[in-house]
Length: 382
Image 1 (tube, helix red, strand yellow):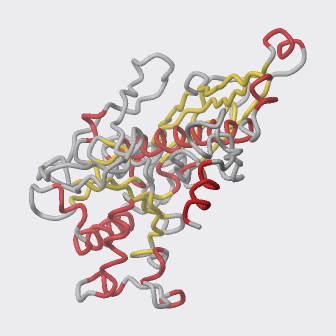
Image 2 (cartoon, one colour):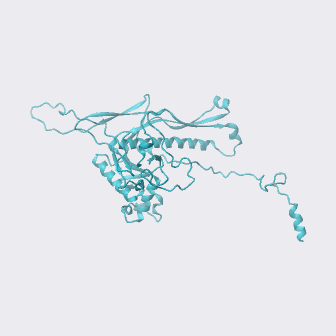
Image 3 (cartoon, helix red, strand yellow):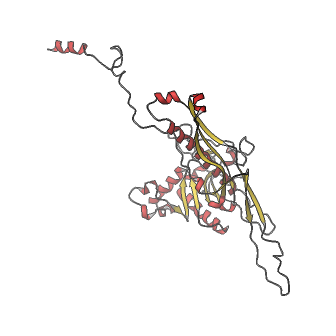
């Protein structure tokens, strides 16, 4: 009986083998799961948090500032022809549209026919992500620049408030940026500064690194100032599911991987120092996590506004601002185009193109607050 079993086994036909040799599953069909694993996605939030204007038939848009004026007592018999000091003073700020920003891919028609999944829609989506990511990054850099700027109103005796820079913590360690109590104190300091400078309380927001945001979440159960951050309407049993801290001092909080953070975008790994908060790299983060800031000065080809370079943000660790803090001018909003007709015939495929023409800069410096850590000296203007 044992001999018969051995004979049946050696003569077994394996339909998955190629020419009856090798891997027993080599010829089996690889089924498409219906899932496409997406690349790194950023949440684009800045566009709706600042002043946005459309621009047609021009290269730049002018914004007018008017300063304060004073009240005077009237002298009987004197003509009233305006204040004797000529107030209110007026100044301007101009935002220019940068050159056309594009992202594109060529899709060969034969490859599309042979493929068993729809890659075209996924390419279009990734192009849209790339444009939205760039949009956020430029606006956040402009807001940081505004926090270090003086008001455009410079008339003697009528100088308006400028930007605000607030130190997070009291040491020269960049790790102060992750201390929940330090962050809460900075928020209240920022709120007081904005009140003192006459900035409206409507539309105040903050944008933090994700790890900073989650440090605040974890502080809810503690005994420090973070213990009072809970939103009681959505508390639940899971520390807000990461969504419970809605605002501090009337400032609504967002998290983003696109803010300037110690000369990187969103996060920075490595040993703690004055310019590195010392978070351990979780591993396999890829090329786009912890990405360094590119040079985006107005001397760089294609850039008409000043967005600074990496060294300008060596100690930046968060932003608090009101919507008047920055302006964005759009000539062409984010859009995706696809070739067709003769072009498709000639090249036997289509170019998927995303394009965007915009420019950003600070408007009202008084509405911009930069958080910084790791240094006793506030970062310099640029």
